[in-house]
Length: 82
Image (cartoon, rainbow, N blue to C red; front, side):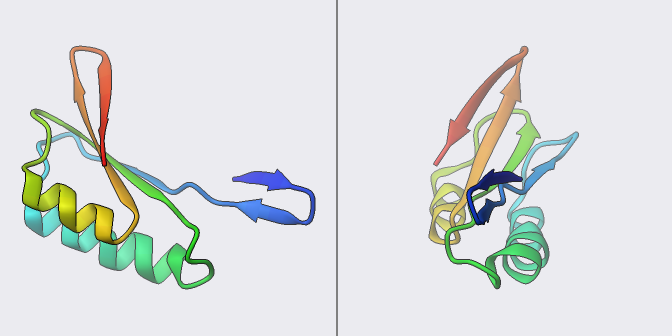
């Protein structure tokens, strides 16, 4: 949470200790991004970090449509997919 004057910006982050799947992404978007944060502001950008390879293009598109960023954690380096 970041306060800017009278405004508060939220940047929800989720983390997985396994590779991303379509099912997990859909649950994160529906239950965390949409129902807990985005209903209050369409400016919320959520991030879901996961281990393993970067998400396939179709998952990246789904995440981008909901303003959710995907990140793949590999060898102590983070690459944000958008």
